[in-house]
Image (cartoon, one colour):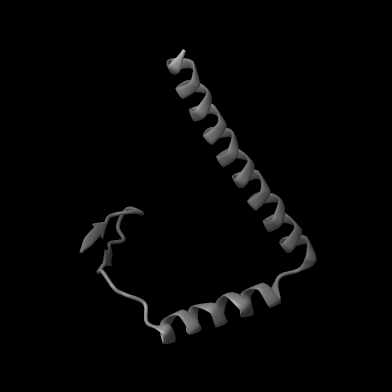
Length: 73
């Protein structure tokens, strides 16, 4: 179990929990409903944001490989 004290004055208690198939179905329904409510502008923003995050991740991976290759020489 973990206690997260942020934001100030609010305590969240997180207990380990394994998702059941029913839990996954409920979460998926909520995600589908949320996505259905999004405007095209919100969808475009989310897509662009995801692309930026993936690009940053690829850049970090490439940088890590470059450092390892430099050490190998």
